[in-house]
Length: 227
Length: 306
Image 1: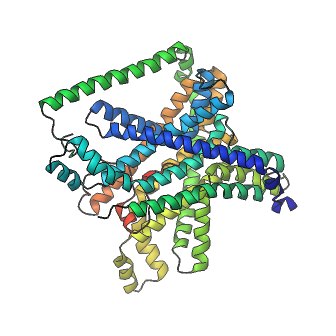
Image 2 (image 1 turned 90 degrees about the vertical axis):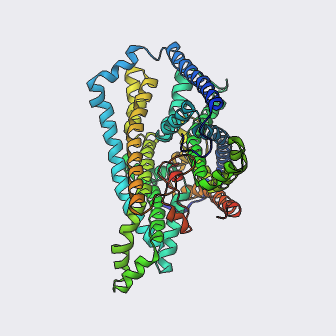
C-alpha cells in the first residue's frame, strides 16, 4: 500500500527516464522535419495543374491518414525491416530507430499536407484574383501572395500536429525502439503500476507538449493575417 | 481545373508543357510502382501460396471477421462512453460555478496532453498493483478506458466549442421564454451544437477506430492482432496479410470520413449561402468556421492526427 505514494522509483531510475525522454525528443524532431518536407512536397502535388500528380498525392494522403499508426510502424519494423531485410543500418538499434522515424514521418506527412492545403483554402479567392489581375504568373502569385498568407494561417494546426507527433512517438514501442513509454512499461513491470510512476511520465510528456502548444498558439496569434 | 484561380485556363504552350509534365510524372509513378512490385516479387512476396489464405472462407470467418468484430466492439463501446464523457466535461467546463469549471478543465487538459498509450498501460497495470495483484484488468477494458478518457476529453472540447458557437440570441430567446439554465442547455444549445459539430465528432470517431489498433501493445485480440500476428504465424505471409488488413481499415475509415463530409456539406447548405470555394479545392471535414470565430481553435482535421 505504501507503494501508492512512493516516488522512489522515479528518483532511482531518473537517468533511464531522462534517456527515454531524450529518445522521444530525437524521434519527434527528426520525424517532424522529414514530415514537413514530405508534406510540403505532397501539398505541391495536390494543388499542381497535373492530374497525375494530384491523384498520386490524394491517394497517398487517403491511404496514410486512414491506416492506424500502429499498423504503419509494424509494417516498417516487421515487414520492411525484418521480412524484406531492408535494413537502414547494420546496427539493429539504429536500424529500428530509422525505420521508426520513416514510419512516423510518412504518417505525419499526410496530416501536414492536409493542414497546408486547408491553409491555402483560407486565403480568400480575391487575393489570388488580384494577383492575377496585376499580371503575376502562377509561380509568382503562389510565392508572393498565396503561400505567405497560407503559411501564417497553418501555424496553429501545425502546432497541433507536432503535439500529436510527440504523443504518437509512444507507439514506436511496437517497432522495437526504446523511448519514454517503453521505459514506463518496463518500470511498471519492475515496480508495479503505481500512480507516482504514471504521473511522473505524464508530467514528462506535459513538459514537452504544453510549452509547444503555448508557443505555437502565441506564434499563430502574432503572425495572424488580419482580415 | 478551370475553376482554379491559381492558374489560367492553359493556352497551347501551357497545354504542351502540362502534357509533358503529365507524361514525365506518369512515367515516374509507373516506374516507382514497378520497382515496388518487382521488389516484392524478388523477395517472393507475390507467390500464390502467401495470398491463397485470403481466398479461404475459414481464414475470414475464423480470424479476420472475429478480429474486426473485436475492433468494432471496442470502438463502439468507447465511442458511446467518450460521447457521454465529452458531454459531461464539455458542459462542466462551461459551468457558471468555478468549483465545477476548474476541475473539469483540469481533467480535460490532462487527458488531452498525455499519450493514449500511457493511459492504456496504466489502466491495465494500475488496478492490479493497487489491489495487490488480485484484480486483473482485461485487455479489452484497458483499451476501452484509455480510448474513453482520451477521446472523451477531445470531444469535451468539441462540444464546448459547439455550444459557444451557437449565436447568443438563441440562448437569450430561450431565457426570455422562461426556460431555466439547464433547459436552455438541453433544449436549445446542445441540439444545435451537436448538429453543427457532427463532422468533427465523426472525424474523432475515425481517430478512435484507428486507435483501437493500440490494443496490439497489450495483446487485445483485435483486427491488427489477427492480421499481423496470428495469420502470419499460421501462413508465414506477413506482408500480404498486412496489406489485406490495411485495406479493411482504410475502407471503414474512409466510409466514416465520407459520412462526415456529407454531413458537413448538408449542414453548411442548411445554414445558408455556401461557403466560398477555397483555392485548393474542398478539404476533408474541418470544424465549422463558426467554432473558430468563437475564439476556440477546434480544427477537426488536425484533431484527426491523434
